[in-house]
Image 1 (cartoon, rainbow, N blue to C red):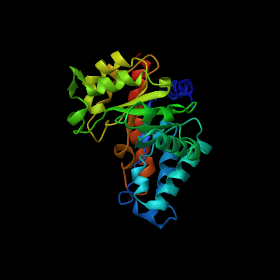
Image 2: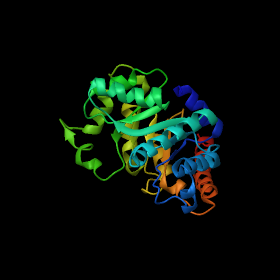
Image 3: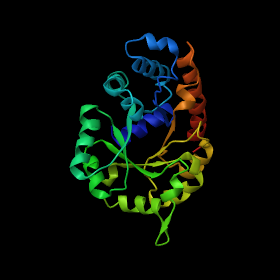
Image 4: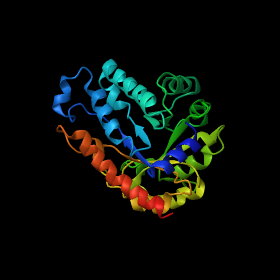
Length: 272
């Protein structure tokens, strides 16, 4: 999916909501455990109930890898279902990969070619040659970890080297990489006050923003500092939506929570 196609979908739905499909089998409704593939059936129900409210879905691959081959098969079935049934939806493999060039090429093939995701999250620590293999794929996006929402982000990301914070160096340096127009960035919602500085460096790039909802991030604060004329944000909510209920009404409850966020987003878009 191209950036322009994503922008068009955001404008059509008046939403920039991304739903994280981080499925912990111990938290899903117990009656689903009787299904042949409980994880896929859970995802399918959530997707069918919320697809009109969201522009993106983001499975965190760790929640599938934890269940071995069965979990990976559930992930494969989920992305195949999304691509076949809701091709207008943007898909993100939250895998946080990043390794030397030939290894990164294999990671990129796995997520872009085999699974068919539109984008994948990557870690920047190993530098240019670990990221450019992802960027080489046409109409695919590489989402670089820039300033994350966890407390440990302060261990390295905000530390200064030669008077410049590490996350700013990551942002600035990444702009020089080949096919950098295919970059997006992860910026945590719990650090809304940093968005103003980030937009000085990457004024038009899309930012994937986790941390709204269960982690305490505030949607209005993020938008105040981070929104662009093309919106430029994908606001992710995972637990707050998918685990709104663990009863028979779990999908309907997820839709209600998604609708609550989408309604706020519509107001923000209409006010631009």
